[in-house]
Length: 134
Image 1: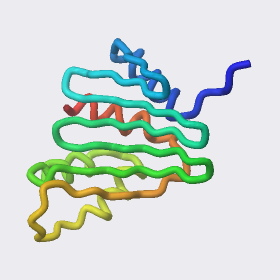
Image 2: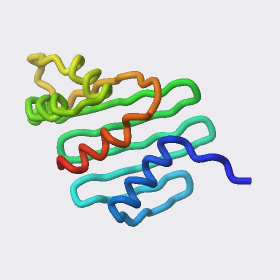
Image 3: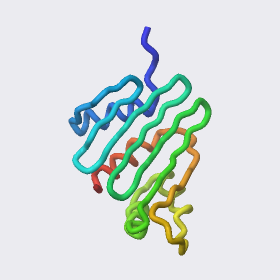
């Protein structure tokens, strides 16, 4: 009997189907290359990871038993544009990220922001918006 797919696996499958993407599989990893973005799904016994990456940002989502979180990174040169992009989204994920995106004068190339998630209910819409935007 096959195990039930995790929410992150379902999101990955839906994006691949909706975008008509060809999946490459290698043991516990599945990858796809969109026109301007990359998706990777990795599954292990106790956790699942979904990575979305485009030229501006990455969304690295983890489902580790009772922990659900997002590591979100932005290239510094796109910080202001990404702030505007997130302000136009109506999701709790975007609101949580905006609170952390307080501009700081630090000479860095990329910033990473971690937020804890209660569930993955908004993730599909959040990633779809990124795909449409980039």
